[in-house]
Image 1 (cartoon, rainbow, N blue to C red):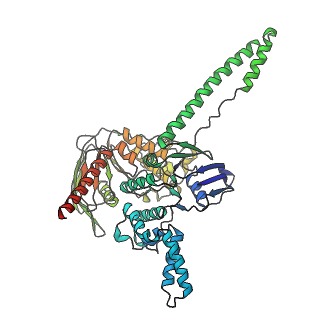
Image 2 (cartoon, rainbow, N blue to C red):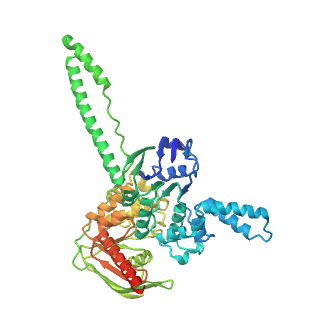
Length: 546
């Protein structure tokens, strides 16, 4: 059990949290939600002891071990992958190193023997002999191949490091597990594995995530941060949404009845205050009026952008033809003879772990990169808007937000351009902020404004939900569902993919294309059925051999 007792955190004059009291108990998975800037990550840092509150304290049940997901992707570059994961249980790793040092001594004494015996007993008690096997299971589950298990962390890619740090946090069955955005940069297969791991995890989990499907799958309770307070709701994310909306509705209805009663009492008092015969009744009504208290209806700090992609022209029957495209990067063939044709009603989600291949394909069909072989041809009625995974260069300038967006608009009228910025929550003075100092989420909203103002009828989006809060993800999801055009996108949000796509493409590790006209859930179900058939065939083969 871990509890926050009267936690207050002040940043200058602003109180991010004030007198927060909340208890997290064993057997529950708590999803921490709230608007950007509400303090979700900060709260987890307070719980983990990385940040001291202004006042109050965090208490943990005696003897319980807390583990949290590290955010520094370079911290363990000089360690092997295996050591990094096992270091998730510091005491176990310490014992392993002490043992190694003792057994390496040339003058091994009787005292060393006694110490080694004590360490061996503690090591066995902590299931140390299964440590490497447990670490391997975690790494394999997250998609880190066996060949990398004893490599240096510094030699691996960024997405692989994310998975290693996650395995480190999960290792050794911690009593309390704190995860800040664990699905960021994970492929959908790794997210699915993590969901199953957390569903079966029996201790306390506290997780910050913007992935609605993930929160619905794993959470038993939701901790909602709003205006410096934390309110607990039983159930998953959907239960929280329904409950919170119901509470607001009930408060509005109660206030409406009270307001009607207030008007009735005020009318009576106004009419009969000067009437001697009715004076006692008027006085009684005054007392009743003073007792009526309206419920305080503070607006939520959550803000939803308005995302609406409107094509300037309808799209024709000929959209995109891709023929035999191949591309090799750093000696690896990431695209191998890729061919497909898009139809005017297609909304295509690219899934699977080969993210470099998808990004490369998007760059090629957007005209940002040349293929080694093959060609592509856009239909004459199409216009494309592209959201790149790496958009650093887009904001490497000295323009403010309004100036930046104006350069992409045919209509240069300031009011017209600011209208698009306002929809994306850039109001008033925000328009004069320099784009190079914007946060990740603000830059994404700028890029989405650029796509909206383009009037394109084909949208190409490479992981657009990274850095967005849940409200913005929901708005983008709804905007793409309504869009009357063609979409090609990749995204790690299960619900986003399931509700938007009607066609699924996967580029395999060897650069080949799997193309299915289906929903994402149907695609996963067919894939799982195929895997089970393969396992059944292998088992039958083993039996025949015996």
